Amino acid sequence: MHLRTAYAAMAVFLFSSETPLFAHDNFRVIGIVTKAEKVSIEVKTRANNLIAVQIDKETEFFRDKQKVNQAEVKVGRTVVVDAYGDDYEDLLALQVRLVPAIPASSSP
Image (cartoon, rainbow, N blue to C red; front, side, top):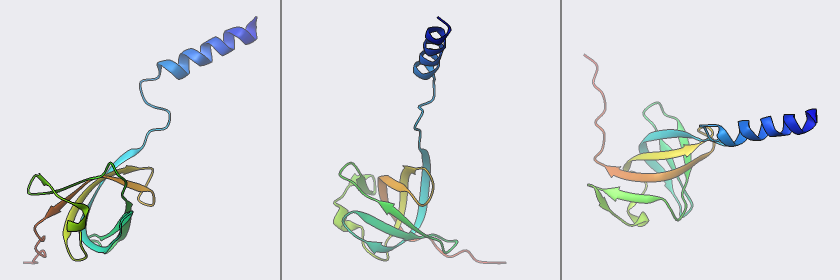
């Protein structure tokens, strides 16, 4: 009888949780495209980090709030990538926005 109660309590906990058990975090990557392939892009950030982001059939591409084809994403273009994953080593792009080049910061 105690085992059945334990299973019932565990089922209530698992199915009533407000947060998903396998949640991913949201990430935003801003920088310049250094590699553009059909299934991924690589972005160099202002901190000189190279971040690879996977692309799938659900990834959307925009420029000036208008949808564009993935072919618009080319090496040297500045992008803002909204992605999700477990960390920066495991990202899947939800949306890639082509934006004007970000000017270099000037020191006073």
